[in-house]
Image (cartoon, rainbow, N blue to C red; front, side):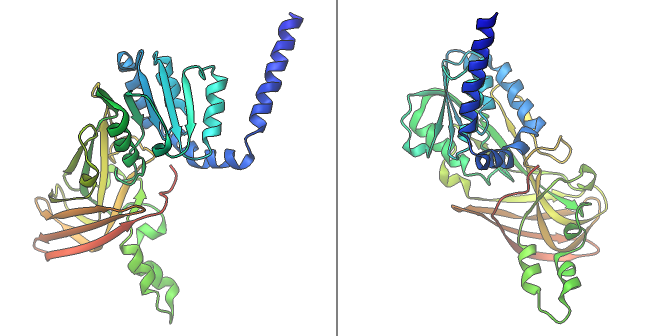
Length: 346
C-alpha cells in the first residue's frame, strides 16, 4: 500500500511539472477561445451522439481532427476504437489539448500536432473531423483547411464529419437586445453627435453584420435555402457565390434585418441547426441591417439576389432586394456589408 501511495505521489508530481510548463497566458487564451465552445451543448453533444452512432466508421480508422482545441472530440473518437487520431491545432493552446490527452491515457492513440496544416506530413486518412463551421456558416478559416486536407490525404472512400451543411436566409423584426439593436445606428449615434458629424460611424454600423441570438417569435417570413455545401465535392471557388431569393411573409411585421443561419448533417443523418427555433449554439444567428424599417403584410414577398465574396480575412456581402405592397414600393435596392473581426463569445 505504501508503494502504491509513493507511485501515486510521484505521478502527481510528474503531472504537476508538466502542467506547470504551460504558461498562464496559454491557459487564458484557451479559456478565452474554447470555454464558449465547450459550453455549446447543442454542438458538442451533437458531435458526441453522432460519433457514437457512427462507431463503425471510426473503429480501426485513421482520423484527422482539424482545429482540435481541447481535443475532446478526438478523445471521443479514440474511445470508439480509432487506430490513430491526428489532432491538429495551429495555436499554442494545443499544449492544453496535449495535457488532456495524456491525463486520459490516450497519447498512444492521439497525436496532438501544432503548426500550419500545410507543413504536416500525414498518412492517408479515413475520416476528417472538424467543427469547420463559422458565423453564418462561411466565416471560418478552417473550411479551407478541410478542403486542403481532403484533397491531400483523404482516402477515395473516406468521409468528412460533418459532411453536409445548408445555409438559409429569412427576415426578422427588431430583436430585443442591447441598445445598439433596439434603435437604428443613425439614431444611436445622433444621441451623442451634438454639433459633431458622426455619420461615418452609423454608416459603418449599417454595413456590418451582427452575430446575435434571435427569438423565433421575431421571424415573420418563410426561410429560403441559399446554398448547400457538400464537403466531399465542394471546391474553394464555390465559397463565393450569387443566388436569387424570395422571402414570403407569414404575418404583419416591421422587418429590420435579413438573417442568415445554417444546419449541418453527419453521415448518420444527425442534424444540428442554428435556427432561431433551435437551441443556442456558439454561432448564434447573423443579422444584416436593412437601411430602414420595412413594413410587411401577410403574403408579401421580398425578392432579391444574395451574393457573398470570400476573402482572406473577411466576407463581403451584396444583398439586392425589392418589395411592393400597399405601404412601400421599393425597386431594386442594393446593400453592401463586410464581416470581419471576431464574433462575440457564446
